[in-house]
Image 1 (spheres, rainbow, N blue to C red):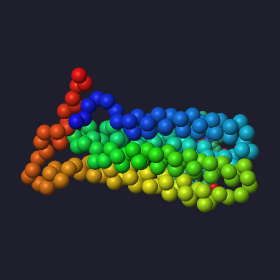
Image 2: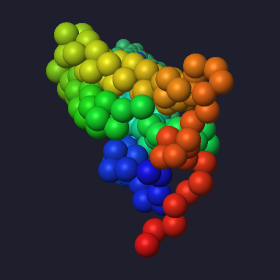
Image 3: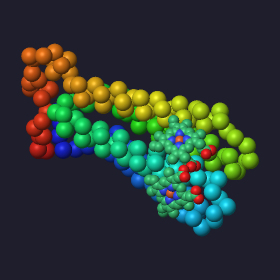
Image 4: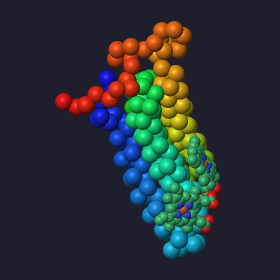
Length: 159
Ligand code: HEM
Ligand code: HEM
């Protein structure tokens, strides 16, 4: 049943996006103050764009899409996995990017591991939202309309 409360993963994605934003703007400020630190640009870019913009959109989409479409989220369990894959993946990527200026060599193995976790998270999101928008089989079968708890356009007030 849809209600006004947020699922833990929607809240966690938005809170984590705020943490990534804080780290991202600090890295941006550092580069603005010290232009010779521009080699930190990939760290700043991924913290800001993948960390803040993308993670916040994941969180908002998990809350809003089921309510817009009136369908329950296809898999809350997959969304939980997605949260950990994306956040651990980005943390590993950020460390791999940061190690380049710190050590003077590339860390493409570590970057690939982080990138694969992050990409796996993105694919989990794609599958979950796609199936949520399609709705349960009864809603796709033609003729059979969703009824009862499957039909969720009505938001239940909290008691
Ligand atoms: C206090 C806030 C910020 C500061 C001081 C800042 C500063 C900088 C600096 C100094 C650069 C490097 C420019 C160069 O190449 O010389 C940069 C690049 C970049 N910033 Fe920020 N930034 C801030 C916030 C953000 C935010 C909020 C985002 C995204 C949501 C963002 C996305 C990017 C991206 C994608 C690049 C790389 C651009 C490229 O590839 O050329 N920045 N930023
Ligand atoms: C699977 C995840 C990803 C991996 C492994 C990855 C990897 C990379 C690599 C290796 C670079 C070149 C860095 C360099 O100049 O040395 C790069 C640059 C960049 N990526 Fe990603 N990326 C990923 C996801 C994303 C996503 C989802 C976005 C945006 C939503 C993004 C935005 C950027 C930007 C703006 C740059 C340019 C940064 C700069 O100018 O320094 N990346 N990425």
